Length: 315
Image 1 (cartoon, helix red, strand yellow):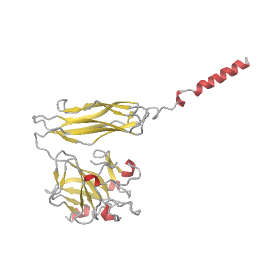
Image 2 (cartoon, rainbow, N blue to C red):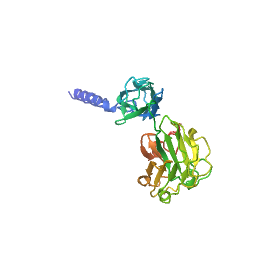
Image 3 (cartoon, helix red, strand yellow):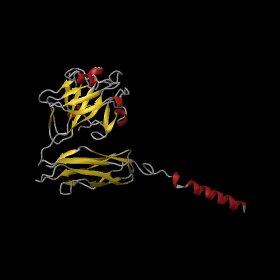
Image 4 (cartoon, rainbow, N blue to C red):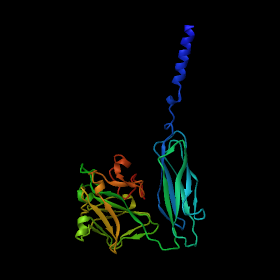
């Protein structure tokens, strides 16, 4: 009788040790989280193409399948999608699909394609996510769109860690930079545009005057450094240096203004909410659409990425 009781106790302990809580599921119980992004926010109606990328928080031992939802003002006659889902192969981090605009002769105005995550197999969405891709109607006049994507107002003073312009010299004023991106499918002429900080605007003294012939190609970036001799390709971006030799962006709080040739404010960027002496740039995350965060929180150990996306790839 005692022996039977012992056997029963051992068998019960064996069953308890085999509960599912002790089983390790590859990638975690729900798998990795998924974030979606697009390389273009605006595409031309004339065959414009946007690539939607799904990025995992970690690789998985099985395929991760992201089923997408499509909505927005554009109809299926306005665009086509290469797939209704994205598959990230086992062991990989990213997968993608494409959206291609379809040309017509109708004056419809700009229309939008909204891409969301419907469901995820072997993973989960990283919160609620939707991307909006605008199809620019080439039958009506378009106005190019410009954003500030990255700003470095406090370069690191640790040796050459702050040498953002890559000229082999650390200089606080020279290595500051502003990175603008033309979101439009049209080239943008910024000749005659001016950059001011607060004090420069009050004195009507620009920190930078864009010279004649300053063109930001469609979908491309322009980087304006405070000074120095910028060295390298910077992802193929258009590169200029401040005509005043100093942006004078004060770490304790300042406002940067981009004003067009007609005297209208195009961009106003308030540094004060981010004035915590970060010794690195602030960049949008995701690039082009996200809020400003410290660069190292996106790519650990990387302090800036002038002319490229935060991961170093070209726009």
